[in-house]
Image (cartoon, rainbow, N blue to C red; front, side, top):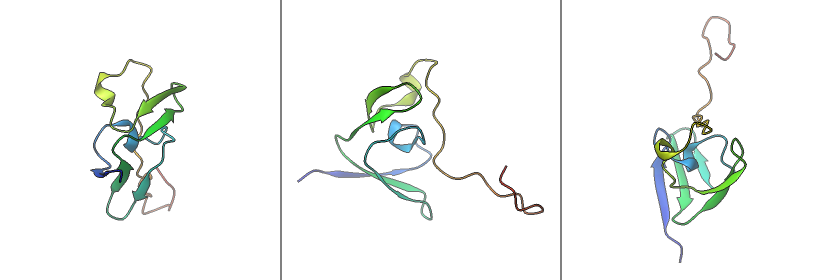
Length: 81
């Protein structure tokens, strides 16, 4: 059985980046990401394969890590920031 990991969306690893297309389950209410221990996916920003637990702080300048959480809505206009 493959182990599953639960990560807060604030952790800067590939699995919590909006540009990573690996298999994951995202709970937006609890702000958590669930991935397999050895999950592999493609970084759409860099066009390369990377593990979900890859620490983006060790990536090159080409890394464009972007938070999974949607932008906060502007309460006055209702538009996203």
